[in-house]
Structure formats: C-alpha cells, structure tokens
Image 1 (tube, rainbow, N blue to C red):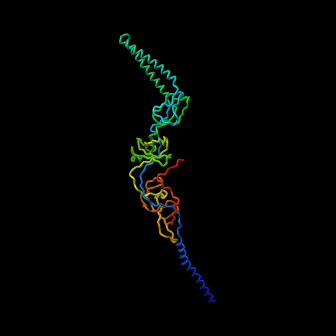
Image 2 (image 1 turned 30 degrees about the vertical axis):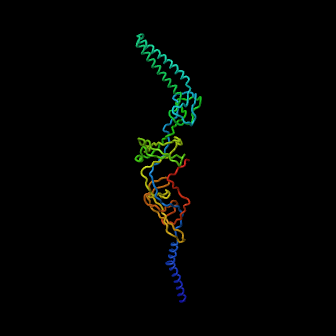
Image 3 (image 1 turned 135 degrees about the horizontal axis):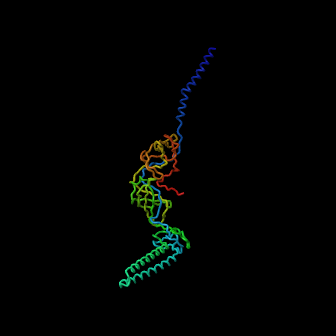
Length: 377
C-alpha cells in the first residue's frame, strides 16, 4: 500500500511539474516566437520622387469677353421696313446703310418745308433791298428774318426725322443675325441687328481686394477659353475699378486682348491668369500625396531597407509632417519637410502607418497637371 502511494505521488508530481514547466517556460517561449514571426502585410501603393521645380506665383480669375464697341442697332422712330441692305454675319464699315424705313411722307413734308424756307428767304432778301431804299420799315425786315429762321429750323428738324428713317452702322464691325423682315412695322427702339467690333476685345474679371497691391495697369495677362483649350491669348490690364464691391469685397478689373483673326467672340467665358512677383523654386508634389489633418499636413516617405528574407527589396513607409505652400492645378508646393530625391506615396495612404511594408505599383498615376482644364459640360 505504501509503495503504491509513493508511485502515485511521484506520477502526480511529474504531471504537475510538466504542467508548470509548460505554462511558465514553454508557453511564453512559443508565444514569443509566434509574435516574432508575425510581420505587417505588404500594401500596394503608388509613389513619386520629389523634385524641385520653378514656381511662378499667379492670380487666377474667371471672366467674360466683351466688345470694346458693341451695340444692338435700332431706329429712334417707328415705321415700316422698306429696304434691308445687309446680310447676317457680314463685316461693315462705319456709316454703311443697313435698314431703310418707309419715309415717303417725311420726304414730302421735308420738300414742303424747304419750299416755305426758300420763299421766306426770297421775301427777306427783297425786303432787305427795299429797306436800303427806305421803301419798307425795319420792322418788316426783322419779321421776315425771323420767319426765315423759323422755316430753316423746321427744315432741319424734318431732315433729322428723315435721317432717322435710315439706320446706319455707327462704327466698323461684324453684324449679327438679322432680327427684322421686309415690310415689318417697327416700333421705336426695336432691335434690328447687333454690331460688334471684334478687335480688340475686353475681358472683365474680378479679384479679391488683397490682389490690389499685386496688379497694375499695363501688367500682362494670359486668357484661355474652352474653345481653344491649349492656346493662350495675351493682353494687358487696361483699367482697374475705382471702388471695391462692398457686398463681395472683390475688385473689378478689365484687360484688353488682341483678336486679329476674330476667333474670339463677346460673351465667351474665359480664365484669366496673371503672373505676379519673381519666380521661385519649390519642391513640388501631387496634391494627392498630402494628408490634411487638424494637427498638420503629413506625407508617407518610402525608405529602402535593402533585401528582405525572400530576397526581394524591402520597402517601408514612415509618416512625416510637411509645411505646404501655394497650389497650382494638381500640384502643391512644399515649403518644409521634404528634400528633392525623396520618394513620397501618392495613393493608398489610408491603409498605411509607420513601418508598413509596401509594394510600388505606378501603372496608374494620379493627376499631376499644373494647368488642368475644366471640361465644359
């Protein structure tokens, strides 16, 4: 009985010792080895190499083209259209007759008034000769002179009415679409056709009041329209408004651009760019590389750690703070935090943290255009 008890106690001690040894020594060792074998998964990202590029500070604004001289032509008096002397869309010289209103009655009245004026002059000249011979009184001659002046004034007034029945081009330019037809009655002020002088053109735009210190009359500007998305039209600032709009705190500016080929038309939407200050050089990144946070802007830098256990290059990322400057299109200037030559993640940052291993795939890149064009939808 005593021998069995001893054997049982020894067996129990061996079992308890084995359990203690596993829990106290082997289990922590296995856990440590397992954790040591765990590695962050490799994430796929795209990157770019930071480079230093020339950076010209620019002011950009949206504006509209308008003619230096433009008008919708109409008659000051009413009447029926008796003749049309132009075709839509043609170039005309200043003074060209465009539309003739029926003026037969007005011309007839003008002839009557001219006859009265002629008779009044004859009477005045005859009585003036008789006055020299003391055949009539001075009062008669004065009355004749006043009658002559009144008749001549009536002729001038009627001549103006006849002239108003002829609508002429007030300046040289290009006509628009005809808005009247032969035989149509027109009330005073009815638009007949538009006339625009197409060279040069104005471009009117607005800038924030802070830009006033950076612009001046005569400063060059570049204008783009979506009709010719890859072409710049150059001009100069011709006028700056004398007051700032109190509602928007914006300043209205006008520039003049040449348009010798008449490729631009009044009313077109335009983008205006003005170079200000001296050119600078900044490290430039795609805007997608920057992660903006309330506590600062950050980027992920790619570091080469040499060969990994599998013999492949081992790349890891680390987050760093940067100070950003101005933006232009898809690019942003980096004032502090990045040096030329460093590799920066441009896409895939949401799944990264310090020490994450990455694989670079640049088959699809984010936009990097300093002057992108917004499509006109």
